[in-house]
Length: 283
Image 1: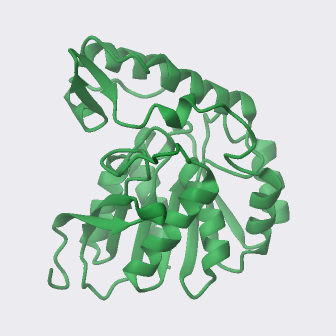
Image 2: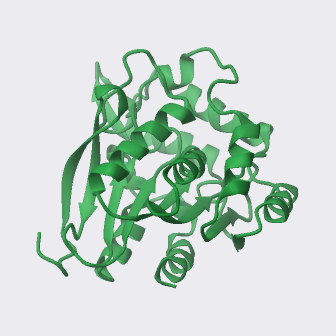
């Protein structure tokens, strides 16, 4: 693709453990900075679509990745969905991009971004955006996410039923007039609609192997690159105390709050989210 075009193409990357990872890419070959988006648990690359297009139209090289077990990427045969495994995938993708990147990660993707930025170093990862995630997150809010994800494990009779489940989980978000947009996140089989992620991501026994808080926090403290923490003002996953602790311990971090957004900040108020991201990326 020639420089300056912002058309979308779907591409493949090699992740760790031989997995194939699928991504959407804009402006491959352009001379703008590269931006790699990492979605949250239970989401996929489409979570970022509007913001990706805005950055691409400004000439940036943009990649939105489906994490292992999510969207169209391969599922892990041994259900290894730890942040360390996701970090190894991200490192592999950055190596294949072959140029410095700005990482933007939400929730699970933000945890992955902290570790990947720390391990890759400032020559490979030049900036980091964390979307409603800090190492010391609120466990009650995290449990509510798991409960919502678990409620759909057996599928939905219709798109409308799936939309009702989302509306119940995100009461602050305006319900779309049509549930058709959910087709990006669901797959129809055996007469029901299922979320498009590996159920083993959720059903594998919960232990401390998903992420080690101390390791994550130390990695963030050690980072020497510009960091932007974006919090949804309605979030129950990142508290005001969590933000204060993060800003006190990570001296290079700056902060923005989206007052009308919750944990799913990019989707809750995409205009405000995109504006903050564009300013930080282009600075």
